[in-house]
Length: 522
Ligand code: NDP
Image (cartoon, rainbow, N blue to C red; front, top):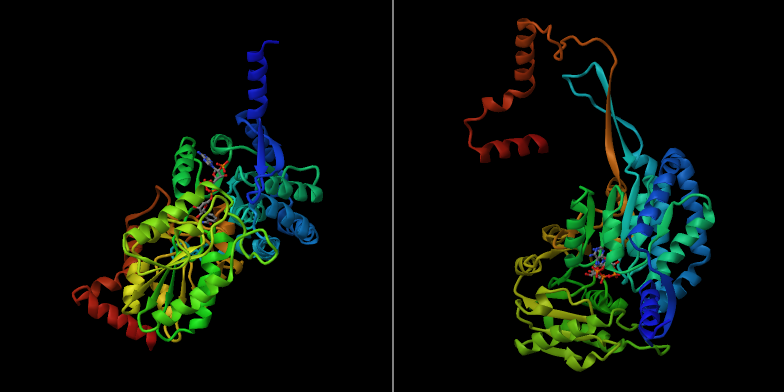
């Protein structure tokens, strides 16, 4: 065998293997065979073969299986946390936290799926009073899930568990950085149901993801960056495959003048620095009322100085999982300072070739990269505002709209509702993600569609509507034998039912709205 042939064969073998690394040390922690398009299609075909069985066993049996899986995950939580720690570098306790939240969502799904999706009767309305009407939400079949690396259990499980709970089978492509976590998840469900393909993992880079988008799936749930989300959507459009896009964020935390500043600083520190800032719903910006800004910045800075990234026992933050992100973090800090912002904790020197230490930037111009683009590192921008309207306007100015938080004594809920984002916590941070009955998802460049909660279950179904005629109609509208007399009767009925609004049409809209409000209050 010539050297060139040997080298070609070696290259081919290398191409078919994907290694995962410990980002703190660079050590290889796993080697996985890569799935090409044919292998992805085979996985989808297996999932298809199991889909009818899984859909057919009904809610109770599915709840039983998901309950057993939950028990496996709970009893083996430490083992799964080891894999998450090895591939992402995050502290073991943080890995356990994300697994625990995923387990809690699984419990909710088992308990609620039938109530949310099962057949229920709805009113047929007056025109079709001789019918009964019902709606139920049926599984789509096979759902493809593409996930990121930052919360490699909690984030994809938001799609995987809800798709399974709705009666679909799933083929999951984890991030190239966390393949071992994906394999572990699929293996753990296989322990409960060994002879069916409820959840399979396919491994690889972007091409494997593209192959999953092109395969014979019924929906694709993507979580990752906005840029990749657009590519995924374009590929899925080839087959008119519907998508859920959970993309990036640039969440703001707002601090009102009457807020509990200690609680706000604590939450801002956790929201900005935990998981080394690699959190889609992390706090990247703070808008604080100018009357309390210095006090707040002092309290936040104290907390920022108290945590550090490293591998020592005291380190609360791990390394940056994806090393290329370090350059993004550094460039955002540099840009903020070059444009006149100030670093009150850390600075450009806080970023080395594996770790990023907390950075607090203040008074940063609103057109800086650190304000407009997702940084995805342990940095936070704190800007002063004169009033809460200004805070809301600035928080809403960006292209993203994922989550957010408000700290306020009296106006928390009111301010929260004005934020253009899918989710907001009042006097807490990231709380909404841990409430299984709440939908999770964003607007704008943060994507569309919802995981979690009733909306998250329905996302992986289609609505099936059925009417049943219970008795002969008084007025049969769908016949060629309809008489003129019946048409007149129909017109009279319509006027009685819907014509009243036109009789007050001459009053100005403002007056009519006020009258309706008055009636409702009364
Ligand atoms: P990426 O967009 O880089 O990757 C996401 C997934 O898509 C990975 O599995 C990736 O594979 C895959 N992929 C890459 N290219 C393609 C392609 N052309 N077709 C199909 N799939 C492809 O995101 P990251 O993994 O870097 O995750 C970080 C991002 O995720 C951040 O922007 C963060 O805000 C966002 N995120 C959003 C969340 C939300 O719920 N809204 C939650 C968590 C994170 P590979 O890794 O092999 O390249």
